[in-house]
Length: 94
Image (cartoon, rainbow, N blue to C red):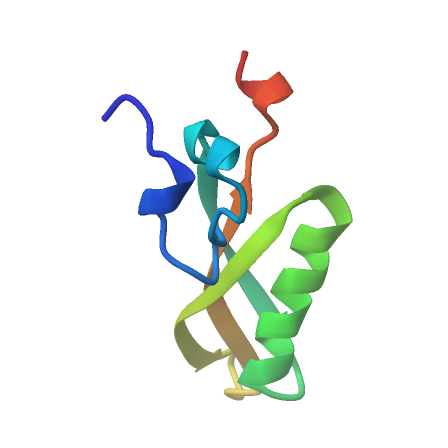
């Protein structure tokens, strides 16, 4: 696949073009996987992963929770495996 125009990408991650000229714009989306942990809950573990991603990534468009679980010797560490999708700047691709 050489490129995907914005009009072929689904909402809400990529948005819809509002201008016909935007249809030629190619969006490159990168997906990374992270595991967040928390002593509180799996929701907090997912938030921890997102907070860490936001500290170094721009243009985050989606976070999908892949799985959650409990770990640790006393089963007191909540974990969340997440996928973070973000748009890659075209300057970084060239």
